[in-house]
Amino acid sequence: MKIEELKNYKRILILGYGKEGQATERFLRKFVPLTELGIADKKDSANYLDEQEKYDLIIRSPGIPKKLITRPYTTASNIFLANIDNVVIGVTGTKGKSTTVSLIYSILKEAGKKAFLIGNIGKPMLDEMLKPIGKEDIFVCEFSSYQLDDIKYSPHISVVLDLFPEHMNYHGDVQNYYNAKKNIIAQVAADDYFIYNPKFTDLKSWADNSHCKNIPFEQNILIRDEDIPLIGNHNKENIKAAITVAHLLDIDNNTIVKAIKEFKPLPHRLELIGKFKEIIFYDDAISTTPQSTILAIESLKNVGTIFLGGTDRGYDFNKMVEVIIEYKIPNIVLFPESGDVISKIIKSKKAEYLHIFNTKSMEEAVKFAYEHTPKNKICLLSNASPSYSLWKNFEEKGDLFRSFVKKYK
Figure (tube, rainbow, N blue to C red):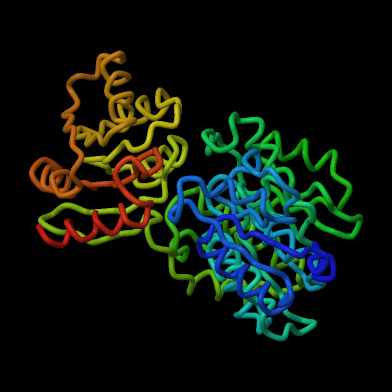
C-alpha cells in the first residue's frame, strides 16, 4: 500500500507490537502523522483482536495469522515493497535463509555496493524508509512464510532455497505453507528474476510456470572445501545461491571468493562451542525440523550424543530415527513434547539399546552429555522441533546450552 493510500484512512490499528510493529509505528508517525493510530497486542489484553472493529485499516504483524483479521488490512512488507523503487533481493525457503542473506550482503559489501540487510534477520523494513535512500542502495531481505502469506508485490530478485514441511500450526497444512512461499514470485514482472534450487521439483515447476527470468543455482562453488567457513552440503547450496545472485549483479569471482572465505558463520547454526573434557560441543539450535537435524547429523557424522525434542507440531520423525541408528549415535536426550513421539519410534524400530535420557532441564541434559558422550565424539544440540515447549525461542535454547557447557567444562 502506497503512503498516499495510507493517508486516506482516519484510524489505523497496528495489530501486534513486536519488533516489526514498533517499526511500523515509527513509520506511520512520520509519514501519516494526522491519522489516529492504535496499538493492540496479546501481551496487553487477551481480547486484543476485538480492537479491530474500532479501526478503518489494520496493519497485521507477521505472527498473527491472516485468518484472524476482520477488517481491511495490509502489512509492513507490503508497505515497504509498494514504496521502494530500489533493487530488493528477497530470500526465502525453509532453512538457510539467514545464512544466505548474510552471504549475499557480505559479497555486496566486499564489492563496494551500498547494501542493507533487512527483514527477519536485519532491521525491520520500514525503519529503512525513515532515512534518505540512494538510487544505488540495494536491500537484501529475508522473508518468512508469515510475511509472504499475503504479499502483494514481488522483489526484483527472488531467491528460494528449499522446501520442507514447517509451521503447520500457522498455515494449516503443507500446501498452504508452500503456497505462502510461492507468493514471493506471484507478482513478478518480465524483467524480474527468480533464482531457485533445481534439486527441488516444486521449485522447478514454479520456474516453468513463472512470468519472469528464471535462473537455477550455479553449480560451480568457486572455492575449495577446506576454505569454506560453513559446515555441511546444505551450506554449499546456500553459497551457490549467493554466487548466482552476485553474478547476476556483475560481481567478479575474486570478490565473491574473498567474501565467502572471510564470512563468519551465524550463531546457533552448526556452531562449534568448543572441545571440553575431550567432548566436542556443537550448537545447532536453529534446526527445528527433522530434515534440518538429519542434515546436521550427516554434516558432522561423529555424533556421540544428540539433544532432540520440543514443541510437537506433528512432524514425521521416522527418517530421522533411521539416520540416528545408521550413524550409531549411542546417547539421546529427549525434551517434551515431541520427545515422547521420538521415544515411541525408537522403540518401534527395536532400538532400545540406545541410551535415552528424558528431561525438561537443559542443565541436566548437559550434565548427562558430559557423563556419557564417548571421548572425541560430538554432543549436538539439534532438536528437530520448535523450541516453545520449554524456551522462548531457539536463541534462548542455544544460549542456555552454551552457558551450561561452559559451566561444567
